Length: 294
Ligand SMILES: [Fe+2]
Image 1 (spheres, rainbow, N blue to C red):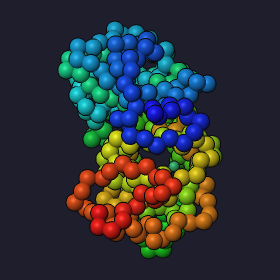
Image 2: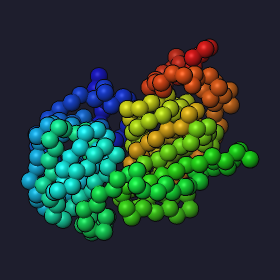
Image 3: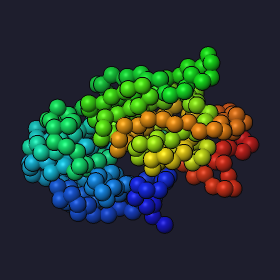
Image 4: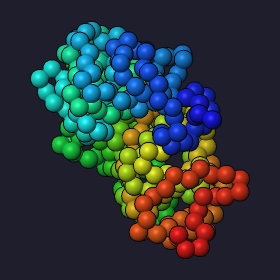
């Protein structure tokens, strides 16, 4: 059964499982193929895993909606600029942007946001960011320091801006879009978390991750958390790179009981460092932690 793109229920799947379809809406992307990862019928916001076919092009136009693209393979041309993998491009609603095309094709995560107010983001101008050239910001993950003497790092690069942190609340009023890196050995608060005021989606771009209530994540894993959905705790053995998107400022609540330390150790000590991370969904018969030699 195909994953449900609605944002009302928790979601956890491999992007490969989502059927590819013609992208007929928004009209600007006509001729592209895409996997619809999530959508909000009230706001019209959609997240696609988008395939721009070879020789595809779209004429210059006025944006009817804010479009954000993270190119993960291939390249596109925006006006006279060539944007390759690892480039983020944003085109704010109501602004003119130049033609977009690709000669050999490209794959991108695309977020289409018709509800964004004009002038809210990107200084009201098209924004291009070669991610490798941006500096990492360091943040203290809420309650990470609950284990005295153990301090890891959560690094992030804001793709959508302006971006804010106020206390334990992250992101602007329409939500955040960040590339997040968790260092090897990161284990967050042992209690599961929830975000009461926003929906959250995460795409794994590299590395390994384990969330006992959900399963094991690997490159191409997709997670969707409705407001208030309890998930976690979070841990990674060798580190990971995530694309994190929310539709509102993300605050954190933590919930008792904490996860069993044995379960944490079974993942952190039990998974081979020699094998590629794998996507395994939690089921009632398996906690998705490795058994025996793995
Ligand atoms: Fe979360």
